[in-house]
Image (cartoon, rainbow, N blue to C red; front, top):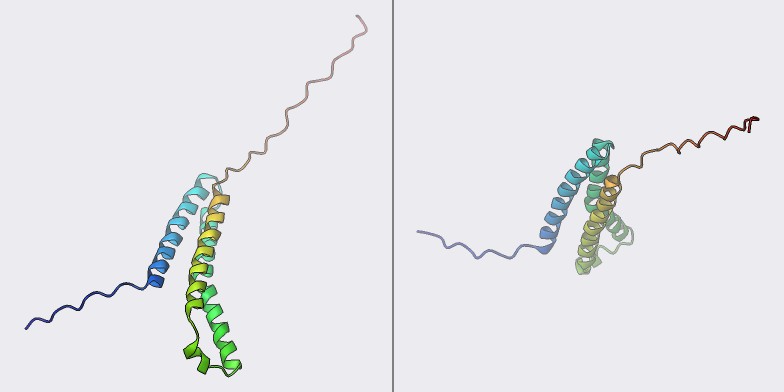
Length: 135
């Protein structure tokens, strides 16, 4: 009558790391927006830059590397090796891309959080002494 629930399998560590990477993109993008608006910079532009760095490095770069690797395997007729290939390298590339995206976004956030130096004019030198002939 009632089916027993199957035991929950442990989550894939790569999925968990990807979720942490997504959370990092969101948190850092919000922080960049707040920092940029408080330091009189363009908040939308800097946030867009941080998002492009985060998404580009974290998602686009591994896909491009995977496509390049697939094209290489197809060009060398070693598709049979694809089944025997250790996909651990793809996991390493995925984790490295997440780390690189966080580092890149952190560098943007660090740059945006710097307060712009006010261009202060140098102090005006005192007027030259007047030499009067009456002394």
